[in-house]
Image (cartoon, rainbow, N blue to C red; front, side, top):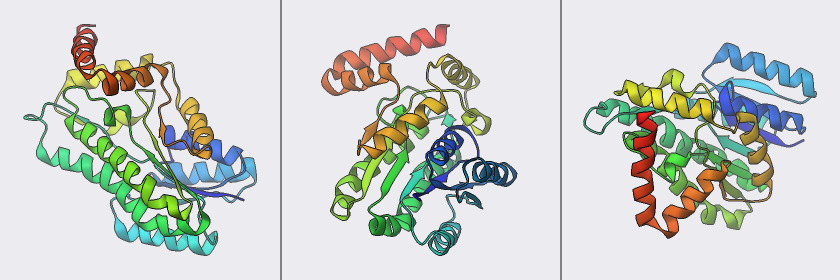
Length: 265
């Protein structure tokens, strides 16, 4: 039985991925700060799929909790086949209005939380020749105004993943980075923003997305097993990313017009 640890697995995309991997016969560690929800989900997955699914409280910024979880996994499962660094938060606002402490909060959780997950779990993945999957965002590849904190944290995850791609290849560990655009989730429930309009726009984009968390979970499951490095589940955003790479001048003009169009709706 394959073994996977998913952070932020009590809700949203993390929950969708936990369900997907459990349905495919994987043992799933549901790691989250939401204790009641996490325990219920792990219990349901264990009962529905007859697999060794369990919950563990994890604040991804806490190194002691990471070490404790790795110890538990090493004893219970004797190893780990995959890690999905999924837990994260959102923030928004102009650089001169978003408090610095909120910028720091975003980076500490989104980027450094993933860094700590890699640091503590990579030794297990090296032994199993497993998979490392980091959840970033399209905001890490293409950027919009008033999202500097979030974009910087997610771009950091993209850079981290690219670095680890070559670093871990000699050990047989594959590295994927998932870059979804907006989709319906509970990400805005904890957002820190200095712009009410920005939160409103984000909500509109989520509501209008043709892609669901379940769609993304299926894409992650299939593409990561194929060894794909950058996983972009939204078709339009693939085009946008390529436009930025090959025709940056046109891309910047397009983004300015796109932002104006969204705000005026």
